[in-house]
Every structure is written in C-alpha cells, then in structure tokens.
Image 1 (tube, rainbow, N blue to C red):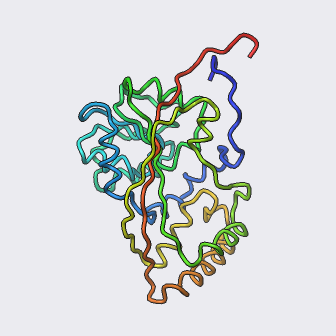
Image 2 (cartoon, one colour):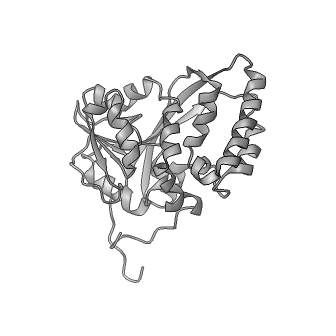
Length: 273
C-alpha cells in the first residue's frame, strides 16, 4: 500500500495465479468434503471477541466454515471472499442466511467496522499481506484480535507415502509447509499474543469423499491437473486408503489450532525507504 514500509515479498507459491484456483468449479465442489472445525473452536473464538456480541470479520470465508457457526451464535458476521462460486454455495448452507456475504478481495472489500474479532481460516496466506493486515488493524475495535485458524489431523498409515504422491501430481511444485504467523511476524505485520488447540474430535467419511477432498486444495484442482492425471491420483489415494480401510470408510481425528494477536496498522514510509 502507498505510504507503507516495503515488505519482503510473499513466497511465490502463494501468488495470485495459485489463489485463483478457488474459482475453479472442481475446487468449489470438493470444498464440502473438508472436515468442519470442532465445536470447541467457536467457544474459543467467542471468548476472544472484545465485549459481548458485536461484529466479526471473516477474511477469506470460502463457504463459511467459520462464518456460519459464528452467525448462529449471535454475532453479526461480515464474510469476505473474492470467489462468487464459494459465496453462492455458502449462502445455501445452514446458517448462510444469517451472514452478510461480501464478494470482493479482502484488499478492497467494503467493510463495516468496528469489529470485535477478525478470523481467517486457512485463507490469509493467499492475500497481499502488506495491504490486508493494516486494513484489518484499522477495522478492529481497540484490543480486538485477529485469529488465524487451521486444522490438524491424527496420523494415518499413508502419511509417509502421500507427500511423494502429491509431489508427482501437484500443479504448484514449489508449494511447501510454512508458518503463517511466523511469516507475518517476521515482516512486522502481526504481533502474536497466544495460541491454543481444541481437543481432537472424530471425523468419519466415505473413502470416495476423502479422495475428493484433496481436490479442494489449490495445487490439486481437477481443471489444472487434467482428467488423466486427476484419475491416476485418485486411484493411487484409493489404494493407499483402501489398504487401511477395506470397509470403505475413513475415520480420523481433527482439531483446530488458533493463533491470535494484533495486526499492525499502516506505518508511514521513512524518507529514503
């Protein structure tokens, strides 16, 4: 943003070309197979909100995995996402009629502050950090936090083999693990204050649904993989999972991890910077 300090660029594998996969029909369709956040997640988020009730900003809402449960708890939720297809699905899901959906990039979305809480569920890494973090900071009520929410799963027998399989079929070969909170903190854009994990809760799905859930990832969009590669990948995952679950059901544990802190407001550029 004009007037801000220069910020080290994001890793290239988080660039806009890869973020645009969330407009792909196959990714939108596969999104429903992602495990939901445990109910405890929303108890923790409600406790982190400043004051009682109030408004919540969901930055990069997708189909509303965070927005819809928070709205059912009585918060006014502004849910922002650039994908019209994701929002169209979210509107139809339970609780979708209670959310104020905003179809726009978080960098330019019309907001209605102040917010008692801002949340970002597996989404903030796709945004232009040097623009979005100061925007969120300005939109939050005094002392209100930004909470970054992710998921973790119990170990599975195929955990060692799966990364090699993904590396053969990924459309984003440079994509790798990264710590979003650390990336933001190192750029002076986020001051973390705490983190917590929910308890593990069971999640059960059909093996076919589990296989399909992989195509909700930016680097395994069916449109970008191509029909042949996608079919080969699916068959290989089915073999892996089927060996451990011949009954055709995949059962795992899922928990949420929450990192919260204060985003840093826009700072004037130093002379010569």
